[in-house]
Length: 196
Image (cartoon, rainbow, N blue to C red):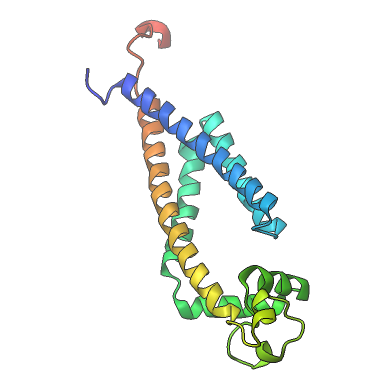
């Protein structure tokens, strides 16, 4: 028996379905865990991750690979390449723009979580900022800047997200190929005159 026949394609497609179900459940679980522990405070981020997990779970359950996974591949490949290609200067611009748009409560929560004060050395407010209630402020009058910590974490996160996204985007192409191959094969156990 050759591993290119009907049974092999069927089993490979079933295995891929199981993997995507597990990945969907994992995304939903990790998002709920992150919200439960308070690691992520933004409901939009949590909602987005849960929506992607549910979407992936529905695709795996329904087995709608050829069209949907083809579209998902295009978006995921583009986003993964963008995550890997963004340089430190662009990350700094995004962090700087985000910092000044967010509310004071969110800034204080980030300063507390990352144990830092202020953003970048654009101003000396982080030294004299009395509203910063990070732990380092009570130990010393000088705290590390949040911008440097954000850049370190964002750089690591973007590389991981880009790599994982790129890997799974190619498994999606494998799913599209397997679905097309399975769809165009004839079941050898089926009655040959049933389609005439």
